[in-house]
Image (cartoon, rainbow, N blue to C red):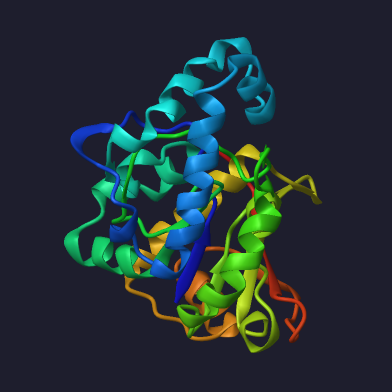
Length: 261
């Protein structure tokens, strides 16, 4: 099973250890593209600060992110599992998984990124600020940029069930197609209250974090979207099939919650 996750906008500070080694990251087919994005981002942030803030969509309170990006080549790196924070990752709780569950997470999880394309949680990266919606002057919209690269790389690692929990901005970086799409499942979180259902936002991330944690802890290894439904039901989640997948469109599962926290 391959689980696709969005990153978090907020990130922990870079470590004090060795700096980033691009050729040490997983998915080596992305190395050249990562280098190009890194160079473009660092160059932008070492230039005019106002221009960098506009491109990155930074408010005045976040201008410190520009200097952080400018220093990326020499900043200390740490495992992505420690860099990404936020609601989804807080509820996933990687640091509190036992050794077996963490090992499963290392193999299964793939975190998408405007800067790195996609990384494993064991990949050592520095803290950065660059969302997938950014349009870098030299490269254009990062979603489209990465889509041209990942099409040749990611199908090689997507050899079983693909559980796609990315937001729409990060889903733009790779769209499973053909037989991969036919074994890909997306999840929509719905809150049911007084007989009515609505899509939730903040709690969407929390629920998805819990789903992934439960799968890793249980050691579940579903091979198809229907087996994934069965696994989640067995773990106590309320799951419904919203749409079957095709060679052009992934399966869609609805997870229904009554209380969100």
